[in-house]
Length: 197
Image (cartoon, rainbow, N blue to C red; front, side, top):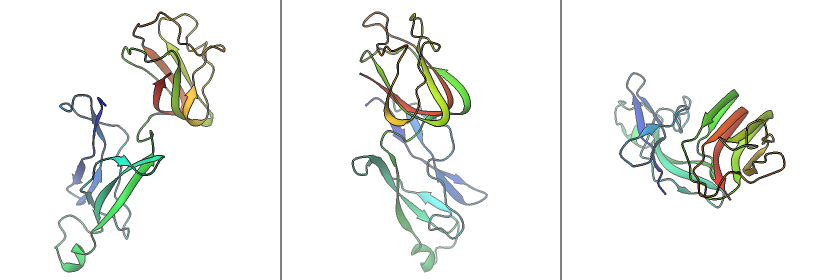
């Protein structure tokens, strides 16, 4: 509930095309572009959305297991004369993603990151993640003995709720009601999010 999303259209003046990007904010005042390029890119020449995109609707459910939005598109450049056949080329189309998988932290090879201190809402962690066949994710609860990267069993697969296990234990360890910093290490993997249980 505290995360805000925005899908602005970014116009490319020299090609007269546009793409739709994803921005996020915690307070709805300061916004940051989510890395990784456009979330909806214009199509190829001849496609219905080959040039100009815009007019995005609010993100919402598209059935039980998808989220999406509607966007407007033209197959002509933005400055093209507004002849009748050009105006008739306007289309509205859906863009959708698997629920919970709009964006991810991704490591094509190897990477790692730390969270800011988080108050746990449970004693176990489940990952919304996808790994390549030889990939994996490891999680450390910083400062907690036996909850290190070395103790973590590799998290592998493609699921919305993969358990994090340290030497057969799922409890995060450490005292109750204390904020923790999590350290994630990835190899050929994507993390879309995590949840407490």
